[in-house]
Amino acid sequence: MRTLLLLLAPWALAQAEFLQVSLEVERMDCATCIKSMEIGLRKIRGVEKVAVDPAYGVDFTLAPGNRVSLEQLRDAIKGIGFRPGDAKVVVRGTPVTGDGRWRFSVEGSGQVYNLSSRRDDLLLSLQDKSTPVRKVRAVSPVPPDPQTTPLLDVTEILP
Image (cartoon, rainbow, N blue to C red; front, side):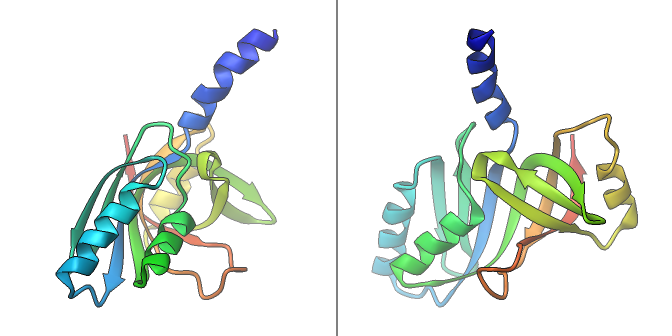
């Protein structure tokens, strides 16, 4: 029985993760700074590819089974001396409910996000319990303070 549980544990963690992240970054106008950002961000465990665009920000392609969180990526950008903004993400996780609110659990990163959407049909579809793990495209604004539960504003449910 223990062998079965150990074999299933990595599969379960791989089911909930960030797949792609595009972070807005302000004031990237120094070519040397951009290069050092690329080098520094590639060192994050779980990051496969980093593309820095001075006009927009940073695009991350993340490895399957990663445990990367948005907060980790934002903190890394702050550590290099830049200010990260909103994130456009593709994320796989589990919609969960508690205290009357729907949230999105990303077990691989250890984070739970409040869910919102401008389209009620998307939120209703996420509440369908026949598909426990869902993949969504969403925007996650920078939380106003570290104690605030971050938000995923869902724009699309992906197959």
